[in-house]
Image 1 (cartoon, rainbow, N blue to C red):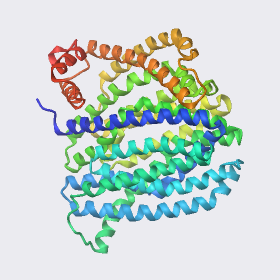
Image 2: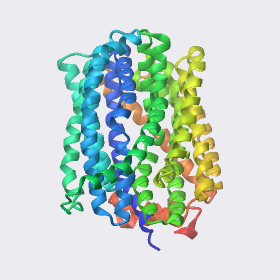
Image 3: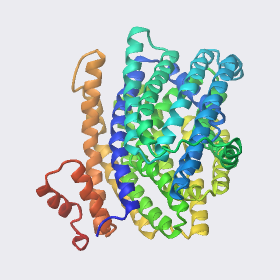
Image 4: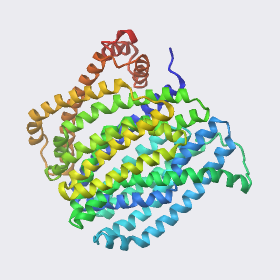
Amino acid sequence: MELDEETAMIAKGAIWTNVTNILVKLSGFVYTVIIARMATQADVGLFYFGMGIFGMIGIFTDLGLTQSVIRYIPYHLGKNEHEIAQRIATITVVFGTVFGIIGGLASFLLADAIAAYFQNPPLAPVLKFFAINLVVVQAYSIANSLLIAMKKIKETTIATTVQGFLKLAVTFVLIISIGSSAQVLTMAFTLSYLFAAFVILYYMKSAYAWAKYKVFATPAEYAKSLAELVPFGITMVCISTFYTIMGYTDRIMIGYFYGEPGNALIGIYSLAISLAGLAGIFASSIYGIFYPLVSELVGKNDINKVNRTSSTALKWVMFSSVPTTAYLCAFALPIIRVLYGGSYEPGYLSLVLFSIGVFASYLGMVQRTALAGMRLVKIELISVITGAAVNVGLNFAFIPMYGISGAALSSMISFFVMSGLNQYYARKIFGFHFPSSAWKNIMAGIIVFLLLQGIEMLVIDQITAIRIITGETLAFALSDKVIKVGILSVFFFVGLGLYGALLNIMKLFEREDVQVFEKVLQKAYVPRQLVGLAKRIAFFNQKEIL
């Protein structure tokens, strides 16, 4: 039995995005090691503080357009309304560009006032660089969203990979040639997005071959399309505002409570929780293709298939995120010690708590996406407002008491609240049931965590204390860290093997999982004679699905 079209599309998109995620995380690993070694904690903190502030500002220059096109273009293409889809693309480009420029200029002029409000004078020049970054990232985001709307996952992943490696390369070159500072980090960050934007523009021509209709729409027709986008866009701005509050309020409030001395704490916290993104490294790839796919299914009014596809997506989210989260929680301390050094160790508990929070957020991600694809964004707004309110309130309570660990705890709790609300509404509106197998999956993850935690307690000092490669240069330090990370990664694969065995014992795999596994091996050019052996090993206790 062949995979249905939607399942095959999710698998194909996930394969491409996962390859990209691995490459981007690899470059990100080297990037964070470089800035941790070559920049002060205060400079790292200023950089991420500025990023948090402009994450807030960028919401309003975006106008919700990048999310709108991902929803509306596939929706209208599913209804064979190509002319309307083309008009929506035109509106997005024009309005997004104009508001991006206006937002960047206004932010540049207000940089000194913002820094004065936080009683943090070194922040002002960083914010001025981020004002330029705002315009560049806006252009990149618009072009990227148009590609995603066309389900051109391969092309968007290539651009993402280019941006990740350019960030690393340009940062290294600028630090060596100019010196290390928060402004230099921001400049390199901006240049990486600028070059990646050109890559996306290169792909745009072929991606939009369907826009062959030379549509010269009347102002009334454009106004009609704009009237369709504006309510959704405004709602998405509100949603993005609260998501961004959840994403950046922790760093901003650390800066608020601690002032200029808090820059170093923000640096420790930011690098620690950046590793928590590994918990959803593979799950995020499923989300990337699921959004335009479910929007197209809604356009076809096939709610039954929306439900089935959502169940498949959630199952694969669980498969991909449970073992990674267990590993990050068990090995948080040695990972931080190896990557960044002993001065960053105070962030290890933040990594544990935030990793659990990221996992919790992905438990409700499929439901949230399906509801958004149905244009039920008011429900998402209710969920995110509640989550943001919980996050802000807990940050006010926990940061003064527990510092950066309190910020991570606040985020974790708010992620759980939002996922619970997303599941409640998904069940109420389109009958989506959180599968009982998911609880077995989580139990398997807890068992893996306990095993890995025991191993970590035995080997942490031996691995982190020894110096495998000696030398004072950056190349020697990076080589030593790479080898140690490789050793630590062995324990991830130990946990992954145990996790797979537990899933087999619990009989949680299905026939379509075998088909996807086989396609992944074929994409990896595994010899045909080895594919059968790999399948028998991977699904050793479920021969009935082979």
